[in-house]
Structure formats: C-alpha cells, structure tokens
Length: 63
Image (cartoon, one colour):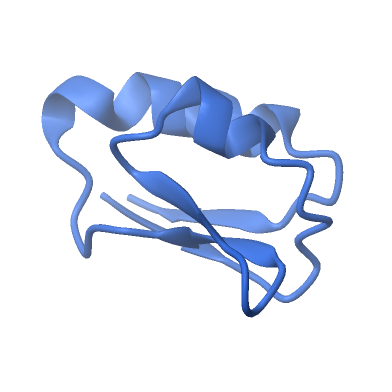
C-alpha cells in the first residue's frame, strides 16, 4: 500500500497526530508529507483512517 498527499492539504496536521510514523508536517511547504514509500502492513488501517478523516480529502491511498 502507498499513500500520497496532494496539494489540497490544509495543513491541519490531523494525519500527523493519528500516525506520526507515516505522516510529517513540512514547515517549508506548509503541508503534510508521507515519510515512507510503502506503508508497513501494521499501519495500513490507521493510514486509511487518516485518509477518511482528512477534511481536504488530500490523502490518496493506492492498494
């Protein structure tokens, strides 16, 4: 599974709070970024939750 964040990110950092192992806030770009190319299986559910809860629908999941 892969996750990407689009430029639609509002920078509310909810994904960072839910899963700091995967998401990180980039102070220069003022949006969150994905730290890993491939999501480890044990974190897939929380990454899916972050995508569902993203107000800007900026997290794209590729299964």
